[in-house]
Length: 219
Image (tube, rainbow, N blue to C red; front, side, top):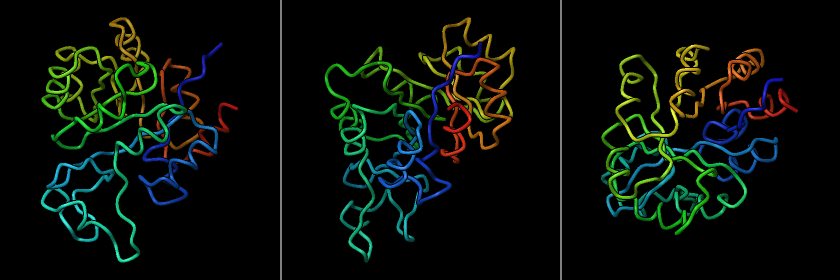
């Protein structure tokens, strides 16, 4: 019998509400997912904010203070440490670091003894993962791979997760990673037949924009 993979929303329930928001995270959990992936960037005053793109409302995040990112509606970007404190006790969190920056607030939010099975810090950037590992060994880290060149780096890094683009995922690769004691997440999977196929191949987690369909596929 195929075991049920971990079900994660891509930037929350991004097919239904604005991505990387509390509303998206809440809805992913309401749909029945186990957690969600979200993106982290840093402001000029070292706030870890939740945003996929390098700019918001035409403002470059890395060169702007957090206070300058508040919109006309008075709403600012969520901060990663607030997301972790709010959802960490009840959801699996895939914390994707888009750029290098001060990770202290994220580590503080995770706490002195976070459950190692409740989160992963992931990135496309091997050097960033190395820097996090140098700061705190044993923390769950994941390499995100979209192509073969990125994939070839997994064996050189101190990671416990490999996040595979759905075009890369295969039975042989998942078996190889499992043999090396790595957990495998497949992203971004938005068709029910593909969700079921990757689960049958042994993927440990699936990341989807369509959190309602993802949860229904394994209900």
